[in-house]
Each structure stands twice: as structure tokens, then as C-alpha cells.
Image (cartoon, rainbow, N blue to C red):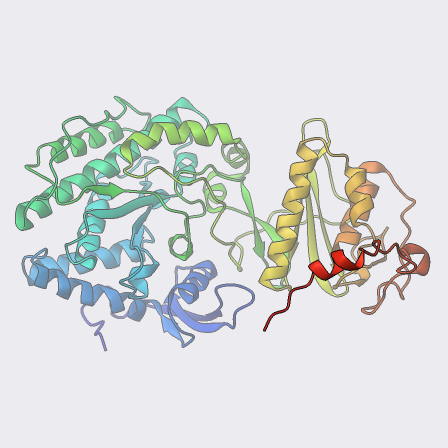
Length: 510
């Protein structure tokens, strides 16, 4: 067993909880630093293989210690002192939730692609700027670590960053601004310069395999963040001064997974924020709306201004500014990897009738199952998006519901009338069904969709002709009234073919 003595884990206070990677999994015992939250506990439960109890220090040392040993064997780490510095740097980055390796390394899976991700908001300094020196050092640690992991054989490594939107908000910048794009480009340039400079240093020991690029993109000449443009330029100049590089490609962004959750990064890569709040499970099991970490740093007014949802055109503009410094094209933006289950201070909870403009949130139970219906409206107050969150259903059920409601939202945005959806989904029958609690106008529903679309009909169409179904209609074995069903017989049968034709339709198989 790996010893923790003499490391930063030695004597560290831990708190213990039970966490699961998702609502459908069985919780496992997790021990983690006292400053970390339950979202991190869920991430640890998802990252660690198996189902046994897990403690973060032991889990981390399970790959840190072997990595250092292998680095010594490969000659990437010159001596024991350099190995100790490498291990200390990896522990420090992880404990600060600033950077961590990808799932393959945590799980010891040498066959899967490995990566190293840096959580950009973790490098905000106390003065409201960006610690470019610490960031460049972290990138260098990541390059060396991945080179060791791949046995110093892979020409392509994957160094990436997460939550650019959170960093920009922390700097007081709107994502859709020229200043933000300049900062994003400078961050990407700094990442590339620091990574290639470290690749050059490794090449001095093990031999160069790639030439230094003769033509490289130029970083922004200036940004609103003091020292950032100069740091990016210096890193690129250091890389250009190398006699050769060890690697062909180094910088690539990836879709977020449990590692981003572990670091507390709420947005993957360079994607814009989806808003100042996110959905989370509260301690009673309800889906609740809570502030994002970026919003908590900013305060309500600034959060609503800087973290407002952005159209695709803003992401495209940011990608165009950053892409020249990446070795792989950036992926499309994704939402947060997963919500936390123990929220920070909650915003005011919606009660009674929803408020407008902007949309509404309804929290009810249908047949004893908790349901949250959220609507979004355009500037004219017209319904433009619908989503439903469920807390007790299986992953497949929730995924199908999400996909269906997403299709409805697309249709609404392209002009499909809401009443068409109401006619299609009101009184649909499938579980859960039964009594509705929390909606004074609808007492029973034959399904979650039945309640949701009759509620939308009330709110947006003013329809009061959709009466509650009877208790019999909501029973699990209900098949509907005879008047609601088309007769099964008599039915038109296809015309009988001639005997010769019929014989040709069959084949003898022996």
C-alpha cells in the first residue's frame, strides 16, 4: 500500500459521505478534503473503479507514485529529487482543484486515450487577474506527466482547459466581447507555448522527434488582463527557441466528464455559460435551481449580465479566435458535466403560480413522483423552450423525456403551434400517473406529459376545456374509454392475390 507519510495528504482532515455517480447507482463511501463539496464526492465515486469505499488521497497516490517511478525509469525525471517535485506538484494542483489527469490515468487504463485538464477559474488571483506563471507551470507538469504515462512513445498528447466562461466572468468580461475573445486567444496561446516549451525540454534529454514550427500564429498584442499577452508571447518565444520538439501535437480540448466535476469546472472547454443558475438536487430530493460557482463569485446583478445564455454565433466567434493555437479543432460546447447534489445558498424558490416574463418553473408531484417543469419565453412572451426534470426515474426514461422535450422546443422555435403539441400529448397514458400535488388547477394526470401539456395549455393558450381524467383513467391498467379508441375490427384486408402469385411469395427452406 502506498504510504502517505511526508506528503501533503499526511494528517489532512477528511470528511466522509456516501455518494453515487448518478441517481441510478448505489452510493459508496467516499472520503475527501473538508473544503470539497458533495459534487466532488460524486465525481470521486464516478472516477474510482469498483464499488468499494474510496478516499481521495489513496485514490490519487494510486497513480502518482507509479507515475513518478516510471518517470525515473524512462529518464524523463532525472533523480529522486525531481521525482519528489513532480509528485508534489501533481498533489498540489489536485488539492487546489486546478488540474488533474483524465479518467484513463485514474483508472489505470493504458488502452484508452489520456488527457490532462486545467480548470481556468482556479488560476484567478486575489487581485482579480490571472496567474499566468502558475498556469504555465501547470501546463508543463501536464506535458511531462502524459509523456511518462505514454512511455515517452506517443507523438501526440492532449493538454486542455475547462470553464473559459467562468474565467471570463471572474475577470468581469462578457463572453460575447472582443476583450473576451482576446483573453481566450491569449490563454490558448499560453497553453500552446508552455506545452511546446516543455516538449522542447524533454527533447533535450531524450532526443527531438519533431522540428520547431517555422510559422506560428501570433498571440494578441494586448489584453485587459495585465501581463497575460506578454506571458503568452514569452512562452511561444521559448518554444520557438527549442532545437526540436518531442511531440507533434499537444493542445486539444475535450468534452467534459467526471474529471471536470472533480475540479469544480461547470463548463467544458471554451463553451459559453448556459446561465447564472443550474439545476441541482436539494436535500429533499427536489430538482432546485441554484447559482453557479461563477455567479456566487460575482453577485446576482453581475451574474445575470455576464452569464446570460449566449447564441451559437458567440461560441463560433470564440472558437475562431482560439482555434489557431490548438492542435485539434475544438468540440461543440456541452452543458455542465453534472449538477451537484448539495447546493450552495439557494435562490428564492418558486411557489404558487409562476411568474413572468422570461418563463416559469412549476414543481409538482405526479403519482408521487417529483416533477419540475421549466419554460422559457422570448422577448414577446411567446413560449420558446420547455424542459422537464425528474428525480426518481431511470436514466433511460429521463433521457427519452429530455430528447422529446428538446424536439418540442425546436418545433416551437421554428413556428409549430403549441396547440398541436397539446393535442398530441394531453391524456397520454404511461406511468407515473395519478394525483397531482402542487398544481391547484390540475388534480389528476394520466402521465407526466399529460400534466405538463395541460399546464402549458392553461398558461399559454388560456384553455380550460381540458378536464381532469377520472381515477380509473389514471390506473396502471387503464386503456381508455371506448369512445377514445379506434375499433380494431372490422378492418380492411388486403386483396387476395391469385393462386399463382401467392405461390411465388413463399420459399421452401430446408
